[in-house]
Image (cartoon, rainbow, N blue to C red):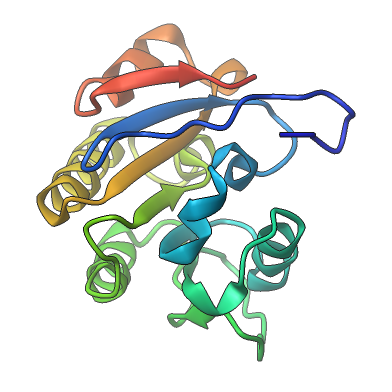
Length: 177
């Protein structure tokens, strides 16, 4: 896949039900790591605005009507586009994120995908232990659904110990930097 910076990276294509910790670069969207078929049934928990998610989906050749977004933001932003979105939720409200995730997961098929686009940012709002338990919940729920999951962390933004903890509930880690 050709990146905005001109580099090419191979898409990460987990097996059905597989959960992957994605070691992502500090710039760009982890959605670019997905194979094309991921955009046919995708739920994204995103710190990016729905407009930005929509733009990346289109740039990757996906149809935004097949993508749901849980917007995670401290500020209100209106969006009236083709993405299915939940109400915005604060990055410090892991319970609220979980509730919106559960609502969105009902629309993800067994061959669908779930992407959390930036665990590193969520670490700024929640204690590591709490976020680790939350990620474990997301991983298990996605696995139980039979869907593929990718949980992005900016490797340079967290310690090796923190990265290893996030990898624990996942099946494997992929360095996509």
